[in-house]
Length: 488
Image (cartoon, rainbow, N blue to C red; front, side):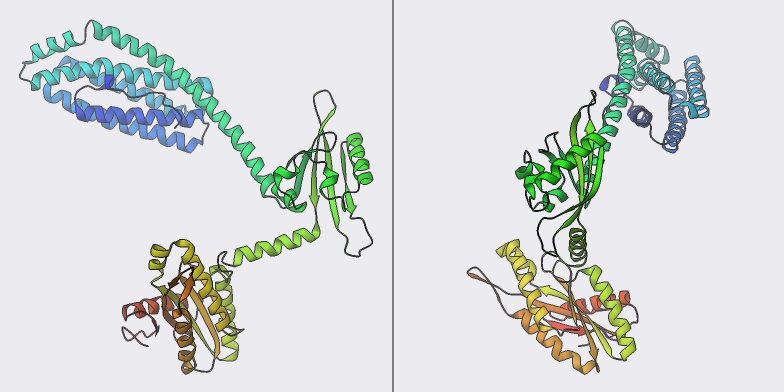
């Protein structure tokens, strides 16, 4: 919340803890309501807050009246206080019934002004006065002396203080609401600007802006990639000079002139030369005019089919491979596993899903550092990649966890030699500068179709088997066996 329309302070404390706590809750609800109204948020949230205010107000008044009746039973002040409470509840109900008009700034300001003024006066005057009587009685005074004590405490300087605070809060209410509205307006504008920039920066299209002479004043990352230069290197450079083999000077001059005359130009531009593979790009150029009608800037969009294909390939690699090791990630593993299950079903061969977790990897990170840990992961990934057969898969699914898929197994007896090789290759020390990093592996194995027939179940059973291997002493493998605690 940027600011509060009703800031709580010690002047509002009555001395009765339960009453003060509930007053603060009412103030908090009003502040949230003001924030919703100032930001023009959805009607559902506003209606919920009005319901919450109404419900909590009734709860609070019930608490107060029980307290007053305990110390001032059948007293005129207690009856008047209850009547005041009921009038506030009635006003809140009227606001709830007219909530469809709350988006109007004048109406919402009037409602919030009433809520803050009424609550501030009620707390400072009537509730504090009643609280003084209760506190007096608790200190041993009789009712008459407690009332006299309260009247004395609430007279003189206190009356002036109440008037001052009420005036200050009336002014604060309207000024804060306007500040919140202005802040919300600026945040919406800022959000739109940020959104627009993010859209431009994220698009595959190369977007740029020049001055009337064709000098670059802004560009998005895709344009920097297109011309193979850093952002700070291209600003102030002439558009044609960034890729002269594509942007011939006479062609660029003609395009800028046409765009300036017609307001817009689009078409193909061809790289110079006789190569059959010369670059072709599609350029869209628009003239941006100022208030006097003169061209202040040019905005352009460049599209290259070849670059789009390359980018798509790059995105697919990023989406499907682990950035550190280059191995398939969990997403690509799921696809490979589904394909392996289908292949195993067609060939009637066994598929082994091996969940591998490194033993002692945390110690490498703790003693040699995270860079050393990354190096260990890369070395082990390379070893595993060279160890497995072409039809097999090695994937890193996070941290020090890997999954291996061994397919086309004639029977289960083919698996132990493969797993022994995996354990041996991981146990070989990894040289890190002048140190030797050593880890081992615990491997859990599930088999298709013997143990499960879907990818998720196979991975879960392999994971469980891996924990069985760890419990059995690590640096070993465990093949899933549902009838025993451990089955190697």
